Amino acid sequence: MNSTRGVARLVSFRPHEPAEVPLSLVASLMQRCDALGRLRPPAILNPGDQVKIVAGPFSDFVATVETLAPERRVWVMLELMDRMTRVAVAAADLRMV
Image 1 (cartoon, one colour):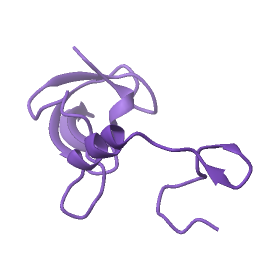
Image 2 (cartoon, one colour):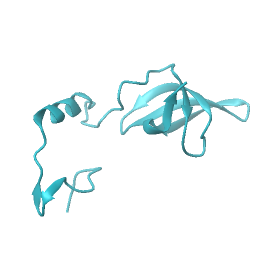
Image 3 (cartoon, one colour):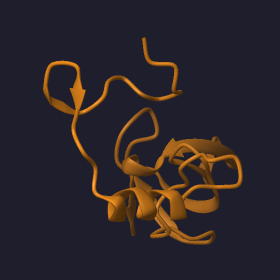
Image 4 (cartoon, helix red, strand yellow):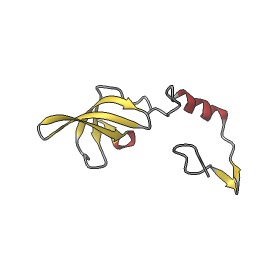
């Protein structure tokens, strides 16, 4: 049983034998972690950037990036029913405008 949060299974090419991961990949992932060891979103988006939501219930809305959060979530502000609303969106579901 895996006990690491977010791990579904180990990459392997033979049963019960994990594949070797290059140290450079491990190092680059570690550089993107916050103080608690959670992976931060890539630094492609910055607060204030205009983005289009491309999936989910807010698909096709244009929003403004407010903050980047761990676990690849991005908080955006979008106009919904004539008021600005703060919504968490997966980074993969955003495109730069």
